[in-house]
Image 1 (cartoon, rainbow, N blue to C red):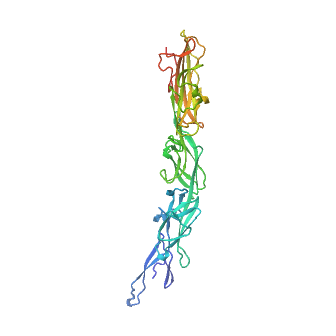
Image 2: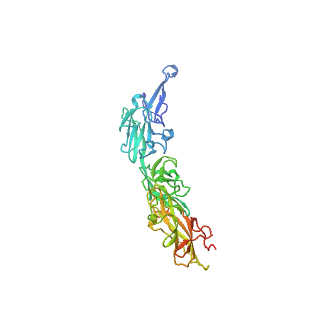
Image 3: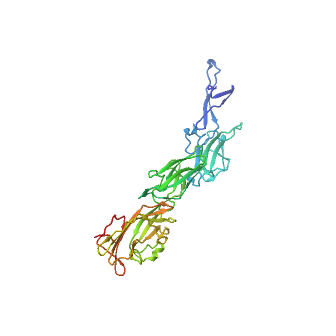
Length: 466
């Protein structure tokens, strides 16, 4: 006796059909009681007869999307598209779960079909054929083959009228690409303050309809996006495949080429890495050598012209030869780096034997580039570049016992493709010479620091030590 007309449709006194049964899990077993009015006196009922109805159905879900709330609403199975990265990294492949039907054993045979050009299904490590037939609950891994949208369809055994229970999950195979205008970004500098940037762009192919949200990070935190506190950046990549622009800067110098890659991640800054672009953060630390021999790996041609570093009496000048060393990070950097030098200010004074002091005009600031023969700009093989400089005093005609004093301030820096890759390195030279009968000699007055080079600068104006 059917008592719920919204659930049961009467065909005759002995046949009722059920059409409106619903289960959030897509499996249904309907249990009820069958009874009829008794024919005995008093119109009583005979004992009810229980019955069960198995509603033929099948259920396939993405792993992690098997809860009741995952089946309903605008975020439910009918709308949800599972993104899968196009990768050979099996740890990033996804899995579908086929639940065992709650049905009679003879109705438990199921068949799987899918867009075989986009993905391949595997049971364990074994590929299954398209149209694979099986019974009972299973799980299958989804191997991406190329970018695009796809569906995986699970069907049950056909009923007497040919109808089949059916369930579908949707997915898309995507690929994220990252490009940079330059694979090298120079580290930030403090003197002068600067933060060079490199323009980059990212896009997605095969994205869900609403696009793909990714978070950009730098490997080992060596990059910024681009300010000092921007350790990550979120981008929404449109499904159209259009490029989205962003910029990066260098925060920590690389130790090897390509170790500061841009990483695109799903689900935040700690999510799975779905794309990388190798980058290198370049930095050069500068030092000066003023005694001893030239560095063994300094391949500048001028190295062979002098016996070593320090004060030397040359044919035309009295000089203090120095070797500027650029320590390159990463040490395996393969390309040339430019050494540049500026003369900040200089002074040369003459004191004649009579005590007369001559002060020529102070020289203005100017670039002071080295000739190519004095440079070794190639960091190979030991991650160093060199600049040999020979500041000094020309042996101009002068009276016997004339004293000449010179003081020069320099700054040195390095550049890669016209972008600064070092702090300013300031250094100075102070020389004093005296005219003798046949030549000039270095002269050591009582004023400390003469005939020397050092770090930083010396103040101007300058007077004689006595």
